[in-house]
Image (cartoon, rainbow, N blue to C red):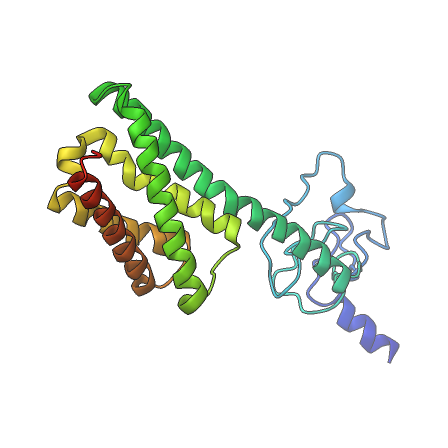
Length: 240
């Protein structure tokens, strides 16, 4: 019985590169000559991968051995336990990375669009154009957020948390209003400009909020219709 166990633990493990003796899975050091490949001077440590595989960390936290395809509860290289404690540590680390990436993306997109809009307004319009542009941004974001909230609350469900959804919507509205600072109100509020803006808004909603295309189109259509109605009333009353 002992011989069978030893044969099974020695299989699929390369012999010692120094003396050629068989090595045992779970014991990195050679039992014959004491050679330890990972501890040799000048050896390159294994990279610590951060991709999750089968609910486990993709590399052992004890020795760095790749756990891709490993289903056993212990590391085959050093024998360390890779079950629930390792999974919890990895899930916590992965959750933090996902949360940071989720907030980082709209900040980068929105910040880039804001920079383009400000530079374009100063270059192609005038500095006095910016207050009206920011007022339009605030109104557009409020209408879009309210529409999205009611659609998600009564129909589609919330794809992300409310703060993250508000941040994604702010980034989307910064992107769709940046062309206003470039081409000016005459082109932006033309029929083709409105259609282009609505299509771009629907694409951004589907991409940023990860919602169905049909739901994104509904939100974009309702938001655009409300904004056009407000602009029409403001024009009739002589506010703009």
